[in-house]
Amino acid sequence: MSIYWGDLHNHCNITYGYGSLDNALEAARGQLDFCAVIGHAMWPDIPKSRKEWEYEVNYHLEGFRKLREGWDRVQRTVSEANVDGKFVTFQGYEMHSLKYGDHHFLSPDDKMPLLEAESPGALMEMLAAYPVMAVPHHIGYPPGQRGANWDSFREANSPLVEVYSKHGCSMSDESAYPFLHTMGPRDSRSTVFHGLRQGKRFGFVASTDHHAGYPGSYGDGRLAVLATAKTRTAIWDALMNRRVYAVTGDKIVCGFQVNGADFGSIIQDAPLRRISLSVRGCDRLDKIVVYKNTHPWKVICGEELEMAVQDGGLDGGGMFGADRSGVGTYKVRVELGWGKPAEAFAWQGRLAIDGGSIVSAETCFRGRSVLAPTPEMGDDDNMNKLDQRLHSLSEAEAEWTCASFKNPTTLHPATAAVIFELAGGTGTRLRLTINGRDIAVGLGELLEGSRSYPMGDLLSETVLVHKAVPECAYTFAGEWEDRERLSGNDFYHAEVRQVNGQYAWITPVYLDEAL
Image 1: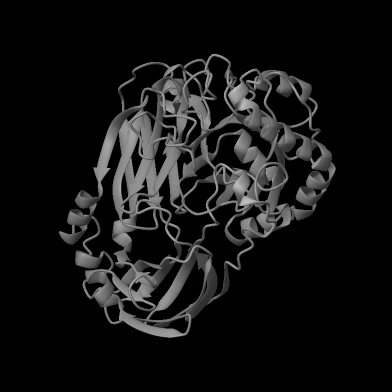
Image 2: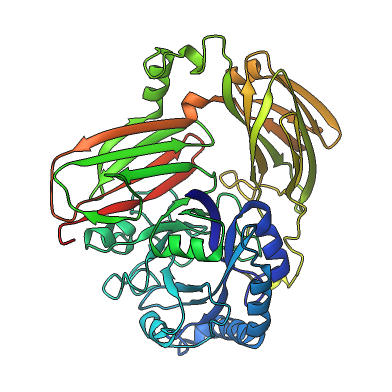
């Protein structure tokens, strides 16, 4: 099986949101293997009686009407975009609920009807003739205020739970990325850890919840699936069987097994549990935690990994982990942005390598960030019609175009980047041409630290070539044994954090004494 990347929860102007459906699908093709573009469809318990809510009520009802009237066109467009082996799409729409929490409903069936119900469970019963799942999202909000309702949660209806999006991280009330939206803060009773401790079983996914037609927008949430092929049937099978994990943005490739069973599996309890974890990240690994029943069981710090490699303790490879001459594999992130213009800034980039080769490239492109649409933004089909793509890639060179925006705050980036995996040594030279400017820098220099190149005077856009990361610092493999049986239904999951704040949350392997 292979890892494929997707976004199953994002929005555009098919309801209240911005950017056309066609542009959203085009953006998704550029960075993802699969996606679902979701329309807002209903809110059964919307507080209509509150006078101060008059605008919000009308705003939502108008969006629901827009989706109903355009549903046939939306279904047709999504269906036509699905090409097995190249790019996979799913149908879907969303229900808000104060009592039950928000859910989006997904299906591989292009005939999935748009129906209305009073609860997620009731809607699933009405859709019983179709393959459908209900995915709870932004679950961390307070109970009764669109947070998770674990009492009504049904594993058969919801094999997946969205644990991260633009709203924040719902793993626990101590996780990174707190909820800061006007809807409120996190409440521990609504979190993933609370549901797991109640014995619920589900897979972890992330998606953007982006409202301006840019699925997979970097940093807002993506999910990985472990599937046999890039087809609707294979990816749907992976989703239904919880072979998934969540990432914030970087495509951190993970493997996690208990007694040979992959993440998401439910297996027979055993007196001896063999746990294995492999990670191939996109930046220096900062911390890895393997959890048992939501409590830390094994903790690996990045500094310990680096010290072990420097001492020759992991592979005898000395400082660079490959050989003592420094020849090996490295990751270098080329990031573009900053400046002050309010509109998108267009970039053209080219990288050529002397004395080495390009192994791979990963794009980290964002759309204009929109979580909650506002009336003053207007309605622009092309809000995020951005020419962001990797045009060519070979061992010798790569070319790309992308766009960046003014960072909205000093804590929220709106930059664009490409992560290059390079084979070479301290004598390897990178030759960059960015918007016509030539930049040359050695890999040996980048191992010492990053280099920035302003494109003009103070407050101008800037190119940042990040510190090079040797392979030993962004990869990990570990195996352990556990003979301590806490219950007949123990479970293990893992969390990976990089130094750049990018995370992966890996779905548990669940043990069951009743099997």
